[in-house]
Image (tube, rainbow, N blue to C red; front, side):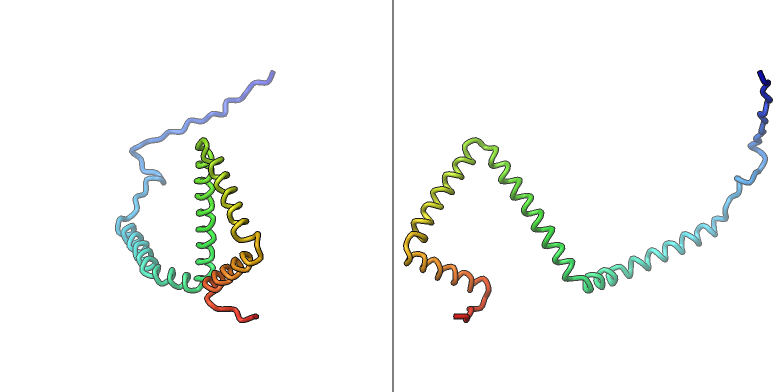
Length: 140
C-alpha cells in the first residue's frame, strides 16, 4: 500500500490585523448613492401617471375587450358553481326539470300549434329584435 502524504496547511487568522475584507466605505459616498437612487425612483414615479394614461389610450380597445372576456369567464364560472350547488339539494333538480317540461309544453301549445299563433310569435320576436338593434329593418 502507498503512504499518503500530509497536505494540510494551517492558516492563522488574527482579528487584530486588518485584512482586505475589513475596508469601510465612506458614509458620504453611500448617502450620495442613496440620494441618486432616491431621485431616480421619484422621477419614475412622477412620470408613472403619464405613462399609464398613454398606454391605456394607445391600447384601450384591446384592454376593454380583454376585460369583457375575463368578466364573461368569471360570470360563467360563478353561474356553473351556483347551478352545481343547487343540484346537490335533494328534490330541487327534479323539481326544476318538471317546471321546465311544463313550461315547454305550455310554450308549444301557446305559440307553435296554430299558424295564427306562430305569426303572433314572429311579430313579437321582430319587435324584440328592433328594440335590441335600435333600427327598424326595411328589407321587406
